[in-house]
Length: 208
Image (cartoon, rainbow, N blue to C red; front, top):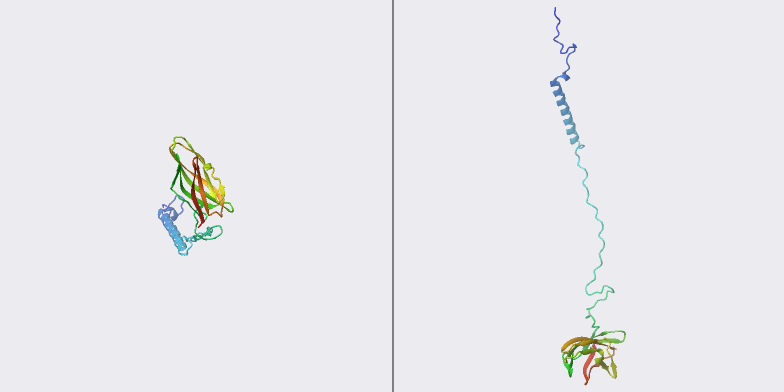
């Protein structure tokens, strides 16, 4: 009588395990995926997965460095004294002199076009005259301090400007003749010396 071997699937006589079959493998994979998915969902619901980090706070700002203090208008930054500005070089003094009048002798002509006065060293004033020299001759002419003097009472004051120019024939040149006088001076006479004599120009000095 023949032996029934229908219960064996292998040559060893042992029954085949379900892990070795394709349906078993698919079933195990599906179970693993389900378990992992459930774990992820549980962690997310518990707030342990994907929790956002703390938001960065605003950056701390360093205190601004103090700027220089503003100086009110009309106030000196050195001593704080206020007051209207004075014209540069005026020093609160004024010189009055006839201007624009030609003073001529022979072929030489001078025109006083302006005068300025300002405080100089203690007790003195600096008086400067702007003078135009016109040479009507064909030869050069000396245009220098030696031609001018400032008469104050009985004193004749020589210039301190150092003017020493040559004016070419038939030409014009302008220069400055300056004097240093006592600050008590109120009236003076500008003397202009020619070969044929002198001419004079009255000068008045006054504080403003």
